[in-house]
Amino acid sequence: MAGDDPRLDLDLSSPDPVPDDGIEHAVALMRSGRLFRYGEDRSTDLETSALEQEFADYLGVPYCVAVNSGGSSMFLALKCAGVEPGDRVLVNAFTLAPVPGSVQHCGADTVFVECTDDCTIDLEDLYRKAETSGARVLLLSHMRGHIADMDAVTAACEDLDLCLIEDCAHTLGAKWDGRHTGTFGAFGCFSTQTFKHLNSGEGGLLVCSDDLAAARAVLMSGSYMLYEQHGARPPDRVFEKLKYQTPNFSLRMSALAASVLRPQLRLLEERAFTWRLSYAMLAKYLRTHDPISIPERSSKEEFVPSSLQFFVNGLDRDEIGAFVDGCADRGLHIKWFGRDEAAGFTATWQHWQYLREPQALERTAQILARLCDIRLPLSLTNAQCRTISDIVRASLP
Ligand SMILES: *Cc1c(COP(=O)(O)O)cnc(C)c1O
Image (cartoon, rainbow, N blue to C red; front, side, top):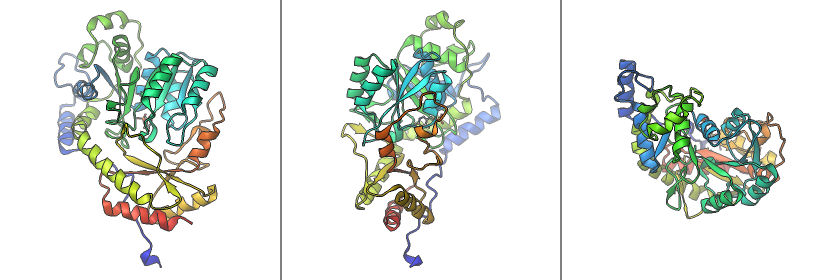
């Protein structure tokens, strides 16, 4: 009965508009033509520097450098952590393409660590891979907002003498045991690409607490000799030591991007509340379907879910494929990490065939084979959550 077949009339991938004051700021900037982040003779009203200061204050860290993508922030973090060509870097295997991409950008090699049923890093495998690889750095991706037990991760990094870099592209505003992600390791890396918590189309933010690392990051981001125009930066004497020794990689964030981000940062707490509400509603409905389960989360995890992940249990690949297609026929576009062909943002390590060291990750393969993902736009209503759940039920065998 086609009439009773549930249908979703909502594009889950549609972004949310820039707040009005962001639009006004951006228009004023375009009128002035001052789109470059630095001034030359005049250095007041610098949007990008103001954003850096506000973001550092928000996280409670001393230093922040704004760049042109999340990938660039990870590249800079790796460079500042001393990663050299030929080095190996540990990365949890459930992640997004720019993460191993940033390692490759340094001329280094990614060594993947298995993922667990709760979609976080497998610590036993971390110990194993750290020992066999000789890696000195762990680039930990809080993929899709799932935060590992950070007490255990930081203890393991100490044990193994690993420098921890956090990829917080999906955990902006999220906390573990009351502490912001991005502040556990030596560096926190954030993205402001359109489908993250703050949207400037493209953009990234790097935070850290170490004077030398912060000065290197500022110089490498492409500050020319204008680093004094940075707000959240170390003292000038730190730059004096480094300024002629550090390459400029030209990864700056423009003033235009910063101008649309600043008002969004002010709305983040309010938006986080909306996202949590949507997640709770949809999770509650989806849990009522037998083959569906939702990854477990620790009570210490305070997450800001801009997407929801669920497992489809007890079905084979063809059945899950048919389920995902059935949802799509009803207007619900679910991402599935088990596809042979990568689609959208669901590439997995098996698709990154440029890696020099082929890697077998059986546990991760089994987990991703049944893992699906739904984006949660801020505008999602309770009624639409119900419709999504109805479509899921109607599309299961
Ligand atoms: C988006 C994303 C990044 C960074 O992406 P950019 O497009 O370079 O800003 C990094 N890690 C994860 C998990 C992401 O989803």
